[in-house]
Each structure stands twice: as C-alpha cells, then as structure tokens.
Length: 374
Image (tube, rainbow, N blue to C red; front, side, top):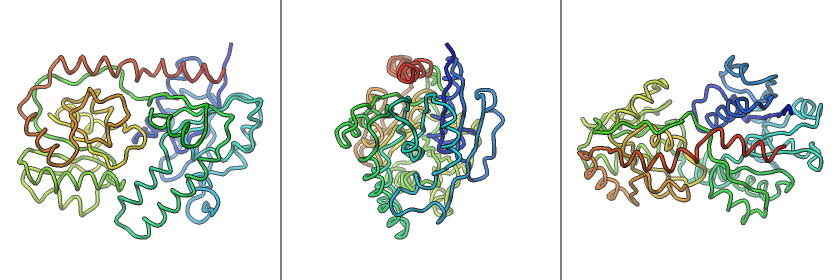
C-alpha cells in the first residue's frame, strides 16, 4: 500500500545545522527510507535557499515566504504562528485528504482549515514554546527583548491551551508529554524521541586534550551558558577550555581570550565541530532551560567522551546514567578536576549504548509515526 504524507516544516530542514532542523531532516530521511512518499512544505526565510539534497527524499517541494517583522505580527496569535499563516499552504493541503505532519507549534495555524474528523494529523512538539520564551526573557540582557519574549510567552501559553484535541501530538521530550496532558488537557500526546544523524556510540576510549562547550552562540541562552562557564567555572580551575559555535558576540570572544587556558572557535564547520567533540576529554553542557531535548547533548553522548551537565540539561530525559551531573558551578568544577586524568572506558560506552541505541533509533521512531497516521 502506498503512503503519501504532507510534511510542513517551520524552516528549511537542510542544512541540518541546529536542533530543530536536525530532527526535521533526519525524520524526512527515515520516513522516505520506510517507503513514505513525501510532499514537503516549508517556510523559507534568511539565506538558506532551496537545498537540492531534499529532492532525493521528497516527491514534491513547496516553499512559502515567512512574514517577518510587522507583516507577521499579531496581538492575538504568537508571532511564531502568525508569521507562518499562508493561504497558499492551505490550498495545497486541501488538494487531497492524505495525512499531515506539522513540525512545531509554529505551523499549526492551518489546523482551523483542515477537516480533523476525516484526516490524520500529527503535530511535532519541539518544545514547550511558552516556557522556552519565558526562559529567553529571563536570559536576555536587552530590556526590549525581555518584554517581547514575555509577551510571546503569554500568547503561546494561551495558544497551546486552546489547541484542538483531534491531532496526535508527538513530543520530543518525555517531560513535554506530561506537560501537554496535565497542563493543557490534551490526551492524545505521545513521546517520539529526536531524530538524529547518529546510529552508534562512537566515543573513543582514553583521554582527550581539553574541555568543550559547543552551541549556536547567537542564541542568548547559549551565550549565557558559555559566559557562565568562563566566569564561574574555568576562572577557578586551570583546565584547557574551548568554546565553539556560530556567531559569537564580540564580548564573548574577548572574554574567552582573557585567560591563557581558554579560547573560542567561531563559526566552525560541521567537520570541525565533530572533530572537537571527539577529541575533547570532557564535553561540558550546562543549560538554563529545561524545555525540549538538547541535540548537542546527544551529539556529545554518541560521539564524545565524558559528558558533564547540570540539572536543567538532564532532568526528565532518561539520560541521567550517561552523564556526570553537578547542581552548581562549584560542583561542576569539582567533577572536571576529578575527570581530567580519568580515562573514558569501554564500560561507559556500553552504558551509553544500552540507553541510546534503541531510544534514538530513527527507523523505529519512523515506524511509530506511520502507525499513528495510517
């Protein structure tokens, strides 16, 4: 039996250079591999263009302009939703009655235009977006941004609470499954872990050369984490520390070079990031937001050695046994000192394999999507 699926993405899913894009791109690949015929729809903005790599996995590809700035602003809908309202998308989806996968709350404006009684729809929940924007407000140093993020968070909370009950909601994190069931009264919520490029745990035994923090440094939360590590942890211990990521601020770059044992690698390629993760002795990944699942954590667990985290990074992820955990800066510093000369062992690799290989199996998780849509 042929299966045809519409996938609506909040952004260009390729290049897969951040968490949401990674989940979307490798989900498309896994569903294509499972024999699903895909009509891809996505909102294009920025300078990504139309990647040719997607043609190999999709029957058709339609792009839609995201309404940025005031054109997409609404006092009634969250900006991430209202800026993706598209009559053309609705028209294309109404040409048939095949199942639809909506990537993120961002793409759910079309739900009002779909016949949910006679059509299977799944909404991928990448985050509790209301909590995510609340955390952005807390972490931002700009008063104007704080006000905007708080406003967006309130709109998102109200919007999430009024989501229709007909679709299947597929949370990327187990904690969000409970949140949408208990907090918003949505019964039809399931947990489908993130789709990733990783198939096996490949971290190397032995000792690496440095500690590493990596992430998109233009994101306020990530800049805050990197700054916190520099000022609260690695100012106290003389252990080599590398920060790597996209678009760091001048302030962070300057701060990273104040000490002889700390440095920053700006805008590394994918190959360079992978090399840094593998060569590091410790991947240190604190977070100031407990929403979603951090793909950089999975990257470190699949391909790196020791992984040191704080509570917000690891809570409610079922990954506690794979990481070293500290509740504050002093605890993280103490763990780093203990681990700096401790080899990463085959026993630790086995623990990770037992936890990760089944849960983050793209083929298995694609089959779960298929079971719910056909």
